[in-house]
Length: 274
Image (cartoon, rainbow, N blue to C red; front, side):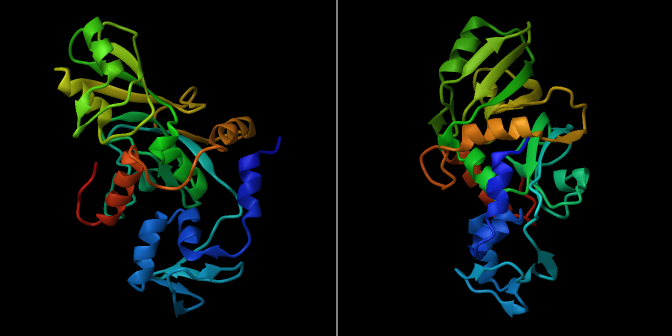
C-alpha cells in the first residue's frame, strides 16, 4: 500500500526557499532558519547564504560544517519516550530525545512531553507534518492517562472538562473521564506549557504519573518503554486525511505550543527547558 503523505513528500523536488528546506530537513523551524541565515552560519555551494534564496536539487547546503540534505525517504516514528528523557535538540543535553533515539536519519519531535512524563512521542523529518500537527488552531487530539495524589471527584472532572484558568488564559473545554480512584483520561486539543500538571495544581491536585497514549490516530499500543517503530501506510493515510485541511502557517490565538517550541530552540545553550 502506498501512502499519500510520502507521495507529497517525494514530489517536492522543485526549487524551495532555503528556510523551508532547512525546516523540512529537520534542522529547525523556518523562523529559526531565517535567524541562522542572517548570522552567516548557513552556506550554499560554499558561499554565504542569503535570506529568501531558493535551493535546487544538487546544491550543497551546510549549517556550520555540517551538510544538510532533505532525505529521499520520509520518516515518521512512534516512540515510547521514557521518563527522564528531554524533548530538546540541545546538543549538550545528555538525556535529549535525539541522543536517546540515535536514529540514522535526522528526525525531530512533533510536540513535547516534559522530562517527568512518558509515552507516545512522534518524530519525523517531514517539516510539513510538524507544522500542521503543532499548530494548535487545528485542534488535533492528544490523549493522556493521568494519576494524581488524591481521590478524583465529580467536581474535579467537571472543572477539568469545562476549562481551568492557567497561564493568563482558560484552557479549552476537553474530554475527561475517570478510570480509577486516582486515575483519569483526558483528551486535549491544545498544548500549553505543562498544561495537565498546571490544571491539576490549580484544582488542588498533584500529578504523580502522566502517560500520553494517543496523538490523533496514532496510539502507544504494543510499544514498550523506550521502543520505537515506523508508522505503517494505513496509519499514514489516516493521518493524511486528518491533516489535509489543516493549515501549516503559524499564528492565531491558540498557537501556544508552536510558539513555545520556537522560543525553546532560540534559547538553546542557555539551559532553559520546558
